[in-house]
Amino acid sequence: MTATDSVEFTARELDRHAPFYVAGHRGLVGSAIWRKLEAEGFDNLVGRTSSELDLKDRSAVFDFFRETKPTNVVLAAAKVGGILANSTYPVDFLSENMQIQVNVLDAALEAGVDRLLFLGSSCIYPKFAEQPIREDSLLTGHLEETNDAYAIAKIAGILQIQAVRRQYGKPWISAMPTNLYGPGDNFSPKGSHVLPALIRRYDEAAKSGAEVVTNWGTGTPRREFLHVDDMAAACLHLMEHYDGPAQVNVGTGTDVTIKEIAETIGQVVGFEGRTEWDTTKPDGTPQKLLDVSKLADAGWTSKIDLESGLRSTVEWYRTHVDSIRE
Image (cartoon, rainbow, N blue to C red; front, side, top):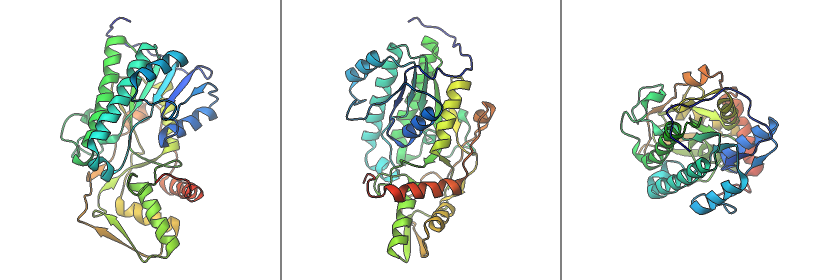
């Protein structure tokens, strides 16, 4: 492979029969992407569980790519968690995500992967970035301290995608989703993000007849939430229609306060008590709303409204409550 300054890409449907590797296909995002690809007629999907392939094992990852020779790749595998997990285990979040990304991207480059989508997180942007957050806000300010290690790992992934484009001319791209939720989420009390944590908390309170639910912080921060099935649809759309070095924000373009989302979840699960807020606990970033103009210009907007998305997610949670991870 020789270095080049140009990237050539023509918008087109991806080959439905070519090997397509979804890294992290059992996770929240990866499983949704897998479902979407199956529904769209992709019949040569490749996935490995963490027990089958440790993405932190560099030689194993290279052997896997040499064996499977995927044409398309979505890198959705990552170590993820909420504020508590990120602030408690920053070394784990930085080191493990860096290892996963570098191994997969290096192996994909050696294997000549044509089209690759790297998935990051909206936490890459500065804590006090101008709202809504544009893609060019990256690296313009300090990160939120509670998840800066994870954010740095994801920023490194974006830069590696850009470096591959510059040095090797590969039409690889990055997408940065807002807060995601939906079937397959992590509802663990210690490891979950805010929305699944609230669903579990309010559902358990409703079932037990509890009078009070206590949430962290003040409830005033504003957050944007995107259903994971929408995210999966956006990923396929971008792989077939978008190319460029800048990461693409993926979201709805609207946000709500944590208090508002808690009230909605309480109503959906049938909680009849009251909510209190533990203001001694951190709020995190005051607001995180993505500017999704670039995504809209690429021809895609979200379809699933928040309330209906929450109802389907609560239904999934209740169906799988006995088997979800702790």
